[in-house]
Image 1 (cartoon, rainbow, N blue to C red):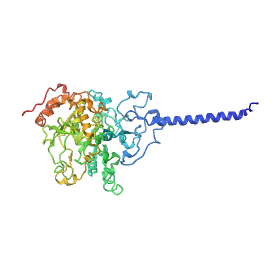
Image 2 (image 1 turned 135 degrees about the vertical axis):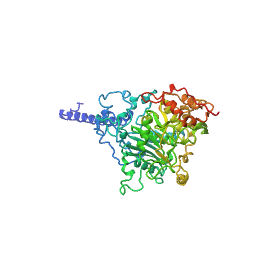
Image 3 (image 1 turned 30 degrees about the vertical axis):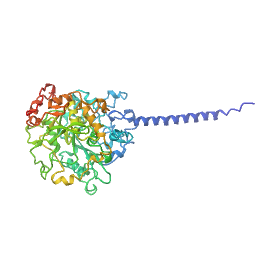
Image 4 (image 1 turned 120 degrees about the horizontal axis):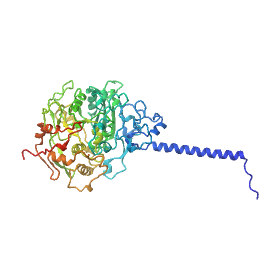
Length: 558
């Protein structure tokens, strides 16, 4: 049988061209998909890959425009890859082939800035409370850290002043467009990030209003609130009492671009450690960091006052922290303080709880300062109020793996900070006052719910977390380390400047027998600690050199 006739050459050529065209289309689709996949891979320190940025023409087609504060846990946002003028990050320009591990761990400073404007900067995590209960399928989308790896910054040794000066934005850039101007930034232009953890608190919006209303330079302040509420029952922290259309002069309206809200469904709340961990994730390189409760009223010109106190220490690693005085009788009508006293942190002792013995700070003495012209050195850190340089957040992030922890939080942060080189001071003057559930505020404040209403849901997770907390700071040497979770211990752990044991020996804490030397406040309140220790502040201002301190506190009245 003769073979079939061949098609004409013109038909064969057409078929070849059609086949090649189809192959080219498939390859184009595949390449586009590959680029999109790589695009969404997380990049270190949130810097967008420069070659992808060029393909995307600075990301203009992907930018999500959202006005005001939003519920970030339920909204898509994207990542900050360019400066305000659209140019690439300085670290990313130049050699696009540079290895990530050789890149500067500190992102380029920007101002103004908001996590609402970031492109793809959310991270999916397993909810730590549910994970502790064996339910790893409960996921959350949370902001990424400004610097994900604190060890890449402090490097387990004393941070250099040069490195410290790279952290902290200035409102106006220098002649090279750099917002990180170090101590060359005018004091009034140094930015402040305020982190607030709020649990179903009706006074949260009043606190935010007070922050902006009473600041002398509100344009340099950015507030980040972790707002844990029940939608429909609780008011949102960014919602003004009167609609902005009717009264646009309200602080929540005027400064809404400087207010970031991360809303969390209240049943997912597992205590202040996790909430403040999320608050640390909202930090974006501001010069100063302030932590406050959600029911606080500030003094007039608080920002100028607390910054002047911070700078008066002449210690780059100073952290000003205290238990706040009650609001009752503390402020006049103009917002000026009526107090000439201030609390100082020096009183702590062991208590039982969550299958452990741990240190809990008690009531702190309040009196007129002994040291004048500077905050006074103290041993302990308080969670209700803290003010420092921004690198404190970078180097001492709240531990992600401590659900249902309330007591113990302060010793954890304080001791970890001590090992990284930070020194704690009592402010000389109070710049804000607390609304306790006492006196005239008792009835209203007692109506505010607490995260403990979720205790049954996360029963047992707090005890596990306490073993980890105490293990990290070497406070439970009798416990086999194999019995507690070591996940990301380096990230949420100790530094290499000092040891926890040095802290315990210096201030009379016996972690074996679980007892403390009493009457430490006499040594602290009198100013003796301040006078004897601060003379060893390093010449470059990078903290106190404890290698030169031989003092060990003993109870004067055993």
